[in-house]
Amino acid sequence: MSARPMPSSAAGKGEPLPFEALRMVGLSGTNMRRLERYRQQQEDRGADVFVIRWPDATWCVLALHCAPLSPALANEQIAELYTNARMMIRDGYLPKLVLRFDPSARH
Image (cartoon, rainbow, N blue to C red; front, side, top):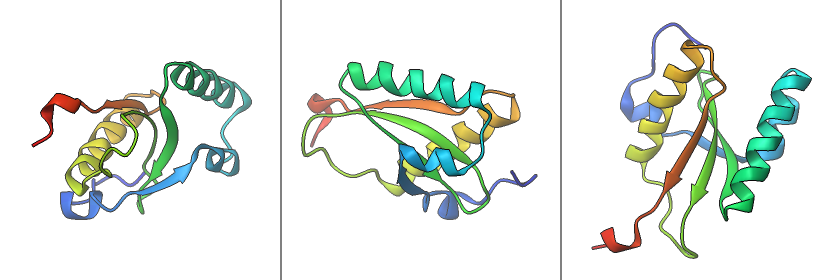
């Protein structure tokens, strides 16, 4: 991870990838088992679980709880995920985030 965070305009350009992309990263077996358990727990609760990767090598596992045909993630949401993922990595945690959509909040 680079020392300086990307500007929010660039942070909104994170790339969603399938969860399986983590296997190519080279995480330790312990971390992969933790992430696999997290994935299973979230999928059991009805979430789609995937990875978001940014150009500066920041990444997070995202559990997305949403109704079918929910809107795509906005750049602002991806930028906020980026900020949260960087803080988690900086603090020594695996960046696992959960996003739930509130259907009553639709305009």
